[in-house]
Image (cartoon, rainbow, N blue to C red; front, side):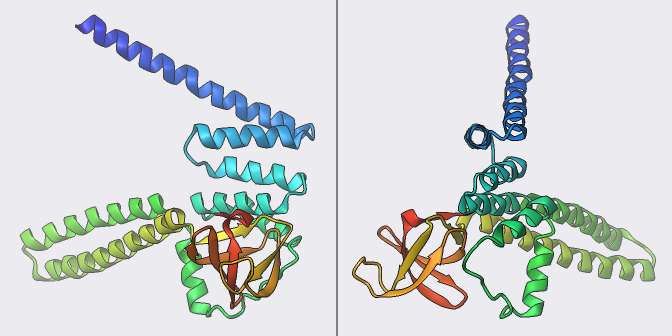
Length: 251
C-alpha cells in the first residue's frame, strides 16, 4: 500500500513538473513570435493559453498587445479590459488601454461621473477580489484577538481601547469584504462589452426594422442594460439602443 501511495505521489509530482514547462515554452514561443513581428502566431498561442489555464492578466495583456500590433483595436481593448478585471492595478495594461482608446472613433464624455463616485471606484480598483478578501480575513482575525482582549482583559482603559479598536477593525473588515464582492461581480456579470465590428448602427428596438438611432465604431465600450433573444440593450454616454450580440464581445 505504501509503495502504491508513493508511486501515485511520484506520478503526480512528475506531471506537475512536466506540465508547467509546456506552458512556459508556449509563452516563450509567443514572445519570440511577437519580437519577430509574427503577431498572428503570437495571438493564437495566447488564445490557446487562455483556454488551457485559468485567466491570467499577463496573458490577456500580451494578447492585447499582439492584436494592437495587428491593427485590431476592438480585440486589443477587449483584452486590456479583461487584464484589468483580473488585476485592476495593472499599470501597463492601463497605459496601453489609454493608447488604444485614442484610435477609437467614438469619444465618450466621462465628466458626468461625480467626483466622489469616481474616487470610490478608483479606490476599489486598487486590488482584485481575492486581495480584498485576504485583507478582510486578516483584519477579522485582528478583530477577534481584540475582542478576546476586551473579554478577558482586566484594565478598564485597555478593555475600552480593545473594544473600540476591535469595532473599527470589524467595520473596515466588512467594508473590504464588500469591495471583494464588487470586484467579483464585475468579472461574473460582465456588465460591459466592446464593439467589435468596424461600425454598427444602434437600433431603437431589438429588431432589424427598428429606427436607426446612432452609429458606434470598433473599440467603443458600452454598458449592457438588458438582453432579448440575440440582442443587447446598450448604453453609452447617456445614449440607449439595441445592438446584435454578435457585434459586441463581453469583457
